Image (cartoon, rainbow, N blue to C red; front, side, top):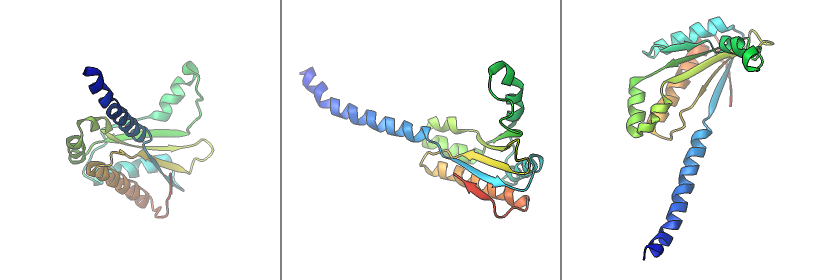
Amino acid sequence: MQKKAARRLHPLRQLATAALLAAFSAAAQAQIIEHLLEPTNLANARAALEDSIVAEGLMPASVSEFGDMLKRTATDLGHPADIYRDAVILTFCSAQIAGRMTSENPRHIALCPLSMALYNLPSEPQRVYLTYRLPATGTSGGAQAEALLGRIARRTAESLGLDGTRMIQ
């Protein structure tokens, strides 16, 4: 009797496994949005991004000097020291959006805080890239996070006088 019940559940297990794999695959393919800010330098872009985050009523929680970290560790870890001319990552959190996303799914805690990065390449000192990943939740909280990130990116470009930034996907 147990064997028959197990056989009947087997297709359901396959379907559940396929659904979980599809969900993990979608989450693993988080979309990265990138805006080209030019002409500007990283210091001006960083100030504009910080101001744009504050204009949303938020405070950058931390700033990671990502480019400096890679330069410091290049010799010991064997990666190139000159990937970036400069690179920083700013993190911040909106309690409203975090509350919405985590009430939709407690696992969405992994999406907090939100982050936006700025970088330029050694060969392009006046070309700064502003990049961020979308939460890819497919929920209203995720849509709110996407809208917030988009507003911050647009406000950053506008405050630099760059109304025609090119979005790269």
